[in-house]
View 1 (cartoon, rainbow, N blue to C red):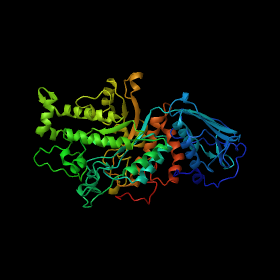
View 2 (cartoon, helix red, strand yellow):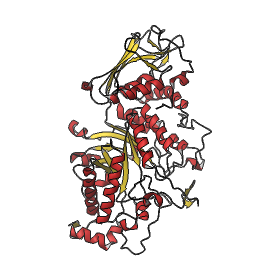
View 3 (tube, one colour):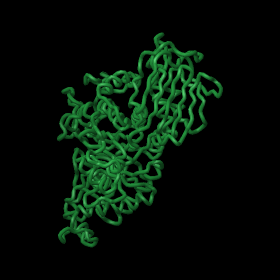
View 4 (cartoon, one colour):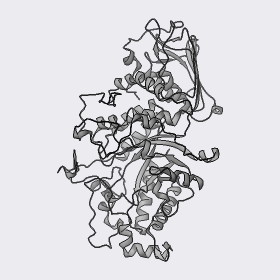
Length: 548
């Protein structure tokens, strides 16, 4: 496995042949992102990196850390059991999950990690810590770090449905995420505009559901471009490959299979899944953005279909503790008009004031699906609309609308992941944008400063209640993200700000963050990432932001 970035390229240094004595004095402080929770930087000589770093480490547990170091240090690494001038890696579970302690002296480096993830994050910190000493040679300042994440869920969401993301580009995003200690990739795989995951038992999902007749024209969202889009989907072999790639970088992928709304692609492929007792029933993939009335019918056939899909998805993502079911923006129009749906509501006492209540039907529907998810060894997570009609006591809620929904869910004992539009919707405009239609976004403005200002814990919670906030996530909905350069332009560096929000417990400072960010951006330059520079322009001016 190969990292796409290299400190050797960053410092433009040729490899040396031997590890030297302590470095010349080091005046430069490392630009570490996210900021470690406890960092003490010394003065004087640091640890010289004038050759392959000798590493003493146990076999197996720290493999991902060794892979990172091999690709990230100026001259790579070499295994050694006796060399004094070396990096010693060990694992102490007492430190806790994802935690690490790092000690750097002129004579050697010690990394103690709570687990494999902690070792990997310590390695990422070590890579970022490389600077130049007073003689212009690569060195790591003398310092001590005690570090652990604030939240267990530090994620980004990628939407492969509106616009498809090639497997190589999903991996590219995983590489950048790993650099900044993200540990969760939430992958949006089904939508009204496209079904993007192969399901062996239901081949029409990709034969029909992965192709739409056209897409909105760039710069005119209400007009079609007249160009068929697809077939675009991930084979199960590709899914397994990406899952393994992420796992090697300590990132867990959480798949999202949308229900009961945002389901047009599936219903177009298998019309019997829909409310086909309605006049004019004719589901086709949506060619515009927005919300569509077509939703799954509450039939036994539908639940059998969803159980089959969940079974295949669960096997493709074996390490994912959750399956995300969406649950957002589910129109109730068809259920309110469908005689069959009305009967289901009546027969199951899903009533309010004696009348069928489609909100209660949504809650009933989701609880049925949750039983299937649990039977396949996973837990249910969904957007905050899953509380409409009553929230399952065992569901985890992803809060994207009003923060009050987080407080309400927490008061009932549910865990939440904070991803509100106020701070986490990275598909919104990052400040002022060029007038070029290709830079169009869904609307709104979300600056780097606004992202960095976020405190994911809602006000007014007790310390015990605050433990139910398990993490924070940035979302990249792809209606106006046509290709990889546009994705990177919107994601970075705002995602890096969110990484620090999710990792660093206290002592965050915007001015200090920006200084460290500016010194860190050459790492993205080495990867040719098309991030938004601090002056607002794209980092890769030749990258074309247009539909692939």
